[in-house]
Image 1: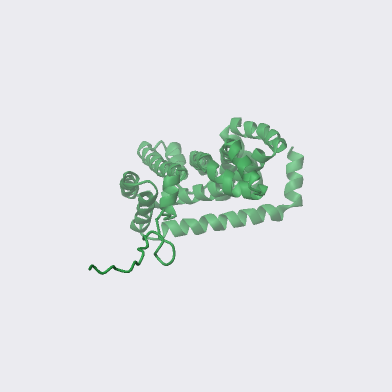
Image 2: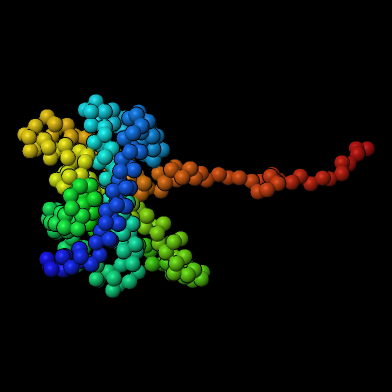
Length: 298
């Protein structure tokens, strides 16, 4: 195995350099976008997002939680962690959801990926650090790579499960009306499987957050680095504060993404409203009065 790794590093070093450069640039850019403005700007944005998607309860929690993070002087570290989690979760979902769709539509793919997913979900967390360090060294990039590998399985499994649970009669009805397989997937299976898919995305984000401290061991900035520093220096107060910030961020992301799987929340987010609008001309709902000549009374 070591010979293969050495050969891979010697054969395609440009590939790992390109991946590292792209990930580093994306994470740094997102971190700058989140950490540069005053905290009140993003607190307002997050609160409005929570209000639109979930309601007043989550909006109030968002305000109090992020104000507490600011009071703990951990705002920059929290935004660094959020950027790392978002990048890793988006990439993991972009890999996991298509694989889940393929597994749901092709039995051979499902049989092939199942043992791989089983091994990935039973592998200890620190084992993911080995290939990340070998190929990318230390820093933010190996932390993101290890987080991606760790977070992929639930996205695949729940996507496959959601599509397989779509009522077969609905699919057969779409086929009877002449819908092509691609249309059935886009217009029937994916919309009906959306709650399960969003549950998978939710789990991807939660697993990505659970890797924060592990990524901190590799040199990634953020709350994980604060926790690692607190453990090595036996600083109980700093460790408790940074752990509390991780919990507050995790609850916010969990409630937000869980609500996205509900059709009502999606319709509110997209501002889709069902309205009863009259047809053009405005005469469809207005009964027409017949014009009868008045009869003169004798």
